[in-house]
Image 1 (cartoon, helix red, strand yellow):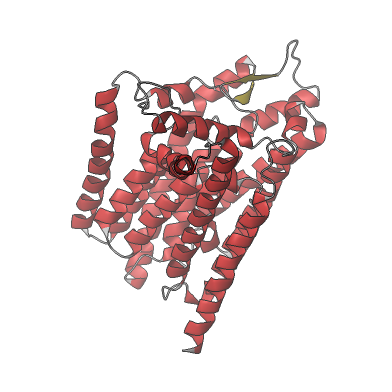
Image 2: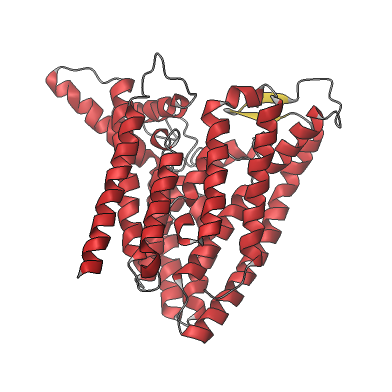
Length: 417
């Protein structure tokens, strides 16, 4: 009884920290004096949702650089914002931004509650406090970024899929994963991991239900948008395909450092701004961007093979696949995807927010350091980085080195825990 009460107290404290962190964040929302370059995406979300509220259809009447369910967290604050017109008030972006902040506060807190449920499972109960405190710490570190990106939404959907999998609910897990894919695409790389979870346990019915549920959900939701605008529906894929090598990626950071050290001679500007980001303007960068998908495929296959071997060892040894093993490979494939991507936006750290606390303490601390370095660079000093500031380039390379180190540390470690 005392243990249960103690866990409840920890959960209440955690919820309090979530709201306190986001409450501090709201004081930064001042469009005239706000010191960071973070409101750009909120303005984009505002425009998308404003068009929807005025009866325009996405992909047909206006272009969208995200999958269709990404519009859900963008539209919900706008619905409330438009309701003000019933009282004679005019909808505006300032109020929309505050509502968007509140929505993300709720997403983050709900994710914390789901994580608390996962941590209460017998395998993790001895680490209950560590898991929740780590999550709260990561939220506090990332608070300059969290309230103004919609990535908490697909992150929450992915966590709900993970939790449904632990509850042995393959159909629901598939629906949540399909929702996450239609919100941000990246959760698709978790399908093989979730599939292997049931396959190794010889639960072939669950494998079938999970795959059918995921594919069916994606198809059903996508069909209306395909009918509305078959030519433009997949424009969000072509948009990202045309992008170059972003300066925050591992190879780009090495190129920036090499140029700063005089190892690369470039007559023109090394950095160009296009497609809403800064990219390296070199033939070498273009070549690297083309081979990164091959590197991703290679590392991804290695990760899936190691996951299968680890799952089998764990299952034959204990009769189950532990949450620690499962979450480790969820993190591994996400890290590989980000590491081999030609874009490394700072909001990508939000994707791993619910799963890092399930790792070992040393690994969670490495990730917290990665988050700190990411936040130092963006939003606080991004202008210095894009201006080729030497210190920022060194910090970026340190962040990327730690990112690669954590990836290969997790892949190398194959111990049943």
